[in-house]
Image (cartoon, rainbow, N blue to C red; front, side):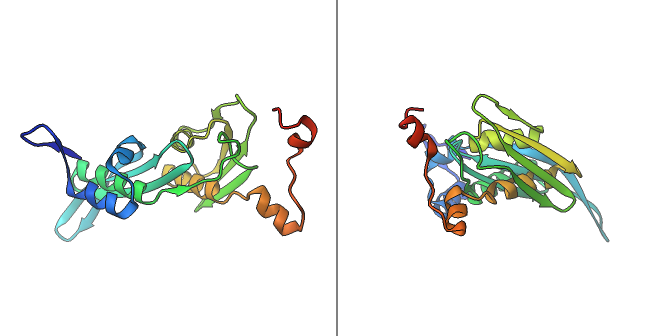
Length: 196
């Protein structure tokens, strides 16, 4: 968060300064990240003193170029929980492999608890056709062509976590070729002279 001081210049608060120190991103980069709150609800903890209610946030953050992270925040104050989740998402950012900078490498699956997510690669111009939560994750990551299916449980929190797990579990063609003891050749360069 920013505070304007008397001179009119912007002052960075302590949590943002700590985040900058932990991640290595500068203030402009942090402000440029696409951040979206995917799950927001009130949780109640029963104690001997009575019911204590708090706000819960599950947030996704990305730079639109293959970096993606999710974070959770919980606090009695709405704004504090939101800020906690945002900072955790930026702190947890990881690069995901992308084919041609627009889709994923092959079909992948992710499973968290009873939620199973299947992500499928698609040709250029197909778009992102899937559930709204997965759509937002793809927007943050910069994926433009993909289809997805959520089978069994459709729990929101588990769907988000399973999608991230699937995106990070992609196998690159180089890894598969190395495992098979083969050499990878780009067929398009051989047949089309690289004029695609």
